[in-house]
Amino acid sequence: MKKLLKKVLAEGEVTGHSHTVAVDVFEDEGIRMFDAPNGALVKHQEHHEVALPPNTYDSDKVVEYDPITERVKKVTD
Image (cartoon, rainbow, N blue to C red):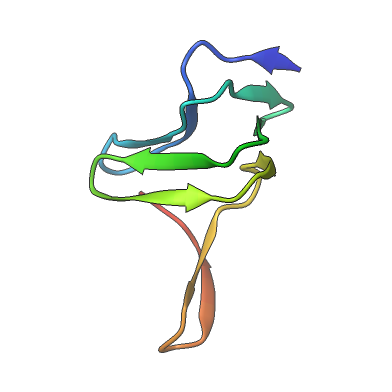
């Protein structure tokens, strides 16, 4: 597992913005992971911060759920 210099979970494919956290981010075989024993805030330049509860996270699959259409889709940024 490699510790990344930037604390970026995912970089935008369209806008160039990124999702970042204030904890160390590691990568292994293209999957980014981080440990947040006290929780963490995910920040993005175009929307509000998202508070995550304490856990260990990976960013292998980033999806979003639309409650109106009841569909899950891959996130593109």
